[in-house]
Length: 482
Image (tube, rainbow, N blue to C red; front, side):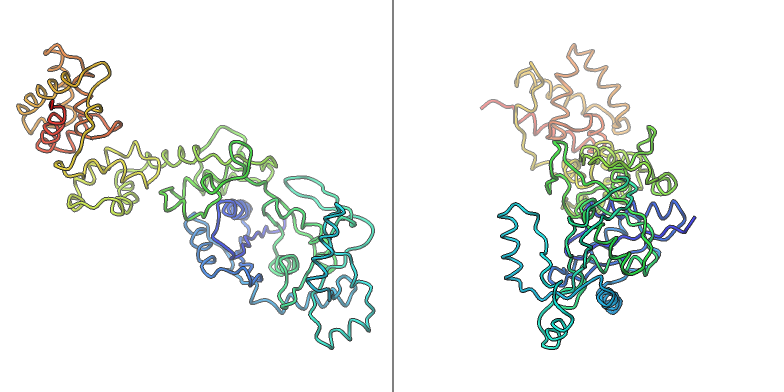
């Protein structure tokens, strides 16, 4: 079998998005699966839309996900001689031609076509220019482009690994611009020349490029190149079947990093957007994906981008971390969101993280879940209603807090740990003839100040006896009448 060579060829016109990351991943995995080569190429011939920071975003995003390239990055702007030579060859052999039409004429032509409900395409006016007319116009340095000369009859056929055999009539193919008036090639010429020059024999990209393939096939044949294998991946849709919004996923890949998603979870998530391993497994490492991935199992149906599934996977990876691993990735988010002298106590920080690891789905939630441990006790403010359990009353909640405060004062520091606290307190509640909820709910709410939190015994252990009693007293005071 011929060595598999794939590439990822983004345009630096904006940040790398998750759709582009999926294309890169599938190209990377197919190369690794077949012990082939994965190339990175920056397609920067559109100088009007070039964004200087975009290339850095692309490279950072790929490296964050754990993808590295075997060759590159190449830059098309440094390879203009190759494209010009190819365009010249196509003109000389009658497969391309010079077009001198002005933008005003092209605009008027398209407006008429739209008004007549015709598909907008070039009408071929400059195809009829004689060699002498062309030479005279070039001599006079008239502004021009070079266009693909599509055959007037026949069809273009090709096979797509995802979509099967495809046939397009030549009458439906536009005479695509190959070289712009600024001398830079368009995507269509450059991509074919580059893929051939770099030995790329598997072109894996999004389905938005599918209508361009017939033009590319004609360019391949005109230049005497061998056709690569094609695989066009379906675009993501939201759960309602519509286009993704920025909130749902159409945002920069590095935004996911900044929100606290783990690269392992993102790779696992996007690998399932269109691909299926044909079994019940849902967790794959990059190494496992390199072994298991197969383009034959890529579906042409539009995959649903479900952020709930991404959150689930991310939380799963977080829970599988050792405490040291979790601390390493969580600490930068804590330091960003929490300003407290207590952050200097590494042992305390670690005990807080150990308690909250089970609840965190994204690392940017760490500050939200742990802030209660770093809020100064004298700054806590309580909503009296929060402290009252179900059918209990504020008076009962206050009385129960008074009782348990006195009980907690009798507990030795040596027994101030979640295990002893829970066992002894549950027994005490039973002895007092009280109900667990009526006592433990106001204790938990007092210690956390939140509706949802770890158990009161876990909170008390981490906060310590002194701080726990201060919070309980403050909560009791908020229930005082008048």
